[in-house]
Image (cartoon, rainbow, N blue to C red; front, side):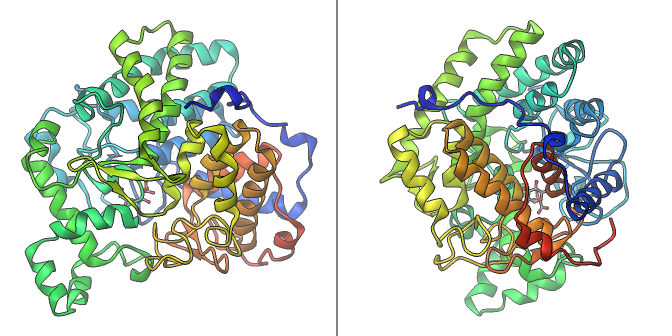
Length: 478
Ligand code: 2M8
């Protein structure tokens, strides 16, 4: 069942910030956020963080554009249009478009070698997989901040590539017309080491990793990695998991990044619930953008897009949404933040919404600071480890947006307030935060945290006075 009829219309910009003035302290935190965005700006792309992530990431750029629209709508539009530079002739928009920099990234072009094995954008180096299709959402948000003429021009430039991207998603990744697209790597989900994906990847670990695991010697691998130089290793995924992800990239490369070939390899294939929920919402926005730009959506694509909404509900069991193993059809029964994204898509039947909100607001997910990416009582929960427990600002933003459209505006406001509390009391733009004590973890000076803070503040959300009292007097410089 589709609950859209009961949901409030989405996408409208909330009351302008000018209606609710910022206190000096909050204005200073906002300035820190703006400084982070400026420092990470490489011209028409923004890197997620200055050290750990020196290139352009697909969904990062979308969240970044959502914040940048408040500062400079034209620059925000450029951020999204720049994603098309990396679009492959078949339509895929890669998850990372490599910038011209010598800065080290652990999964750089040499790991992918895309232009040696298949036809890529040419002249632009990228990875061979994609990421959650947030572009249409971001484009609509940016469009709302533009004049009618500027928006029409922006949409005309974006729409043809965006339609080709959605065509690619269905043609290449849903060849059986299930309505759900299939992912070939956890990096495509954006939630790299979430327990769902780790369950799928563990069995395909490289032989050496499996041997070391048997003798509890996985730590020996730590010396071989460089991504944990900026961030303590226990805030990242384990070395064993990382080397397994590298192995999967090798296999994808051998398959020339072609789904029909990948299907016949050992690569784990997942119909990821969060990715498909984001796609369902993106499809709605795509229709708006294409109509305004005068670009036609092929009939077959419209049919596929419609199927996604219904198919998402096949992923629900006893009121919980899960990802599904594409090969076996089994639900991957891990409770994680991904299971709440159907609220963002607006596909959760009205009768189920309050139960989901109660779960979200229960101490399992909402400890001191919500919302934990893995429930706090789950054996896999680690409060400061990446996608295995920490609070992520983008997840909170998406869920709050969905709740607004369901008319659960109080719950949405509580999530935003709580998100602002956690950022504001740290005083810095961390990649993620512990749900237990609000301490920042991962990379500091992280762009989407900064951008979404600006977006929430400029749309009128405010932290509590408790958080304002906790603002540290010395902040990490941007
Ligand atoms: C993280 O993922 C990258 C690989 O894509 C990495 O760890 O190197 C994830 O949190 C992902 O969602 C995010 O887009 C990326 C850049 O912020 O970092």
